[in-house]
Image (cartoon, rainbow, N blue to C red; front, top):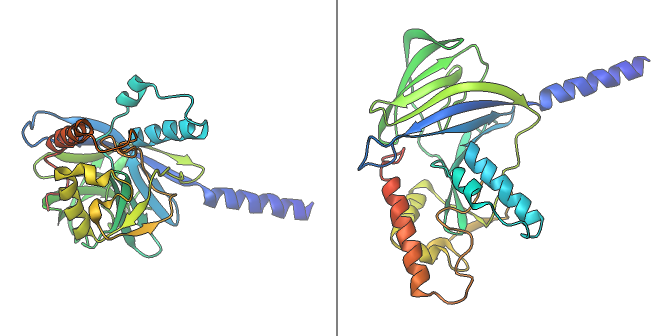
Length: 291
């Protein structure tokens, strides 16, 4: 009986430590620089385990799940176009924080592939003595300059996590709210609950490791010549280090992932690609990071 008791205790301890916490943030954005009255709102998840955390869009996760199910069934089920359209997201990226090595990795899709870089700019917070209450939490104010914006965060020590949405973290508690001084981007904690483990986010295509500055250059190139990123080999002619597929977030972006399967780079295909990327660039002309 003693051995059984020890075994049950060990299983309980393992289960307790294996669990992760999911924090659901409402993300409010004004991504179109030409129309600041256009406000986009959607939910995103910050999943935290002892080893790492993941930040990604709820809609992107749902889209990836549908695509993965279709892929596993041999593609015979097809997609419900209306359902997929309803799950479109302005948060096409994911952010992973490695707690062991104190590193932050950003991933986003350009054409066929996912580009990944390690964030190389530290967050230098100025913590204020100012406090207030947000929901059930007593929060404290902190400020930082990052990505060309001035940010104000409110963090709580009621939750034992030095983390937050997007690339934000490193404060003495969890960030409950963070917004820029122009009111163009904000992240607000809505709720949290336990999950069994961090999800293995699906990836379609290769992951290309680059430096952050090179990613910015590739982003600009993609806007002007998206078709070069859809050819076999992808990368827009970029010298690349690839990682085996698996572990990233990935539903095709801007029509990505398929290329021109009909054979040949037809003028119609090129024009459709360029028009779609131009429309996406306009809709995202006020990005979260301005520099």
